[in-house]
Length: 112
Image (tube, rainbow, N blue to C red; front, side, top):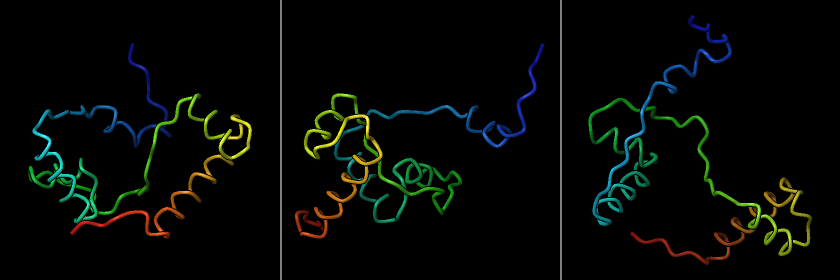
C-alpha cells in the first residue's frame, strides 16, 4: 500500500529522487572548477551543472558557508571562548565574529 506524502513535503519530492554523483578527478581539475564556480558566484555543484549544460538555479536559496563540528570541536571552542559546550548558539556567534575579524584584519590573501 502506497503512503501519501504529506503536503508540507511535496516540494521536496524532486530532491528526494535526485542522486548525487561524485567525481574522482585530478586535483588541478577540481581546483579549476571550484575557482570557476567562485568567480561565477555559483556552488561547485552548480558550476558542474552549467558546464554540462544542465539547468541551474541562478540565485542560491540560502548562500552560506558551512563547517561540520563534532562534539569534541564544540568542547575545544567552548574552552577557547570560555563557554559551555552546550551553548552552541553562542559558540556560533563567536565563530562568526572570528571569521569576520580574520577577513577584516587582512589575514587572508586573495589570489587573482
